[in-house]
Image (cartoon, rainbow, N blue to C red; front, top):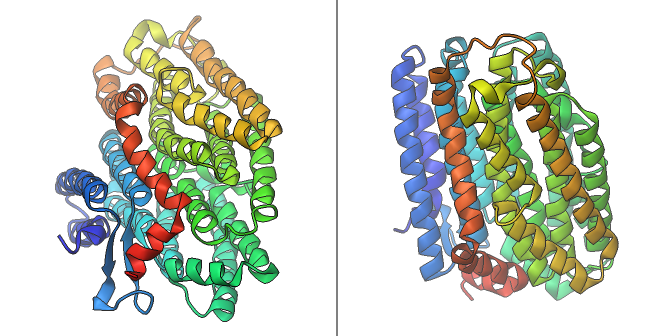
Length: 493
């Protein structure tokens, strides 16, 4: 199917447009959104299988060949992330049916939800740097609406900060794109990789590489550019928080993945060492925030920052085990973070508070919720054989091979601190004596629990079945380690 690489973008685009015309018919919106999400997962699975069997798929938009026209590129890394995005999108969508509220549903929640997926899927699939900026902006525009939808005081305050940070980041993105184009005369990623290799990445290009790290680091929340994230992600309702936490920062991380393996990989002593230092500092800052908080939402939010640091540390090592681990880990983290946000959302709805000190004893009335959270928590910490283990182990192997022992120690220590932070939620939230009488019905809780259980079950299967998944991960790593595979597929040389 010649248009297959672009279908994950076209489907939410048409779905979002259709939903706009039914803004007052909530049940119809839910039905259309649900069916679209199921179709999206089917398309994404077919895309992954097609890339696995046929190699990298490309589509020249408007029949213009690369590097002259905009090109959509589905390699294995992009395809796996698109599949993960669509699975998470379905789970959060179903959770939204029971928790987002009819007022938000009537004010274009579902169309904007679809437009956010356009930006995320498009950012993963584009092969053009300026088009990456365009999809970033589509994603950000949708996130602005989702963040402010509802109009509470905290949402309005945090949305202002979020918008200012991202407008500045987007402006800097355009400046870096302009600089890169002035030096190399192209914005096609494969063509850029080819020309940077020919030039040997002189100092000016290494400086531009750091400029792009600032842009993507701000969006991915690496040290010291993460300060906006805890407040901004804390403000919206739980489904939006889950969507942001699972997807938005990962688009920034993916952009670092793409630029630092495909393009700016010729001066690793400077660029990748700088990236490694920032990754270690990001892990430290995330750990401090996670263990210091008693707010269940903020504990999970700071765990996002820890995971970003771990993944970027793997990218900075630029060897096969570390890159394999980073890909395994980013998929795991997207799934499990979405699940954890949905689970703490149920805890908050039951107890009426997001402070652990006001909870307790939930396991007596809601054992299914408790044990689902427990499995998600130990998976997040990387306890074998769950999904966080294999990726983190391979990152540690890559660090040992590279002699990066400080980073190796920090990743190990962060695993213990992550376990401590989520076990604190489990112990104080589910054990002990209830602080108040919990009145939310078990049937309501079980209904809301279904999408979280789905995500946790997929993550468990992903961890236990790592050996079955690894051929796909290996194919993705081959492209990252050998940019010529990507260049040849896009430029058809």
